Image (cartoon, rainbow, N blue to C red; front, side, top):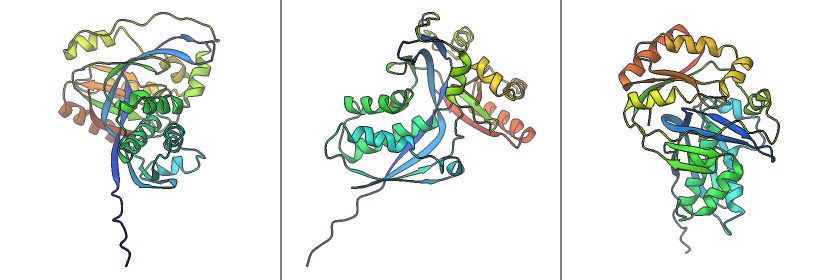
Length: 294
């Protein structure tokens, strides 16, 4: 009598939202990619990804954001898995289940975070070390934000996403607000209108201050260069900014990534939660989330 092996356990990973505290566009390379300098932090909020290891590769969607992804022909989770499989012979794959909680096309790196979580799950299922360079290569092939999301730790990102310098940042309470307007990254860069070969400047030195006040002072000198073109595409960002600026204790209000999510920084989670309640009550049609950054 044959004995069936026990079923493999389901593996689970968080996919934290990525927040661009700053984002400078330093130029556009001859290959079309933009050279960036961005201080990244990761939030307590994010998506969830599960993997049931197996021979076949598949993806199921659930959660409030699932309908927005249902029509996608090739989710970044699947692209990341295939990129790693091309580098690791005999890679065990399996069925992913993505609980989509973050808004789509929101400047929070949701798809990139999901792809990075898929790579971490596959690393666990195949006993690969997280510093295995094949994981990094698969991440960069999948998308420019995926290498940073692979570690999901605050860092200074350079190049098109391949140069990562870890940084220890003070913790902030934060409120993320998306007006439920999708802004495509390609459209924002197109509106920026940099021709290949253009150089716009050099990256600023990394912040040295470890205090909240010192970091906020530094952040005010380093804006998000994608905010002006994103505001032209999504004028509602002005209303989002005004709503956050009006809350008590907001230290800095800015757009993340290519938009259209704005964030506000607070000294603690209690102030952030109070601000989120006020904004959500005044604008029930918006996606509002209080969280922690750092």
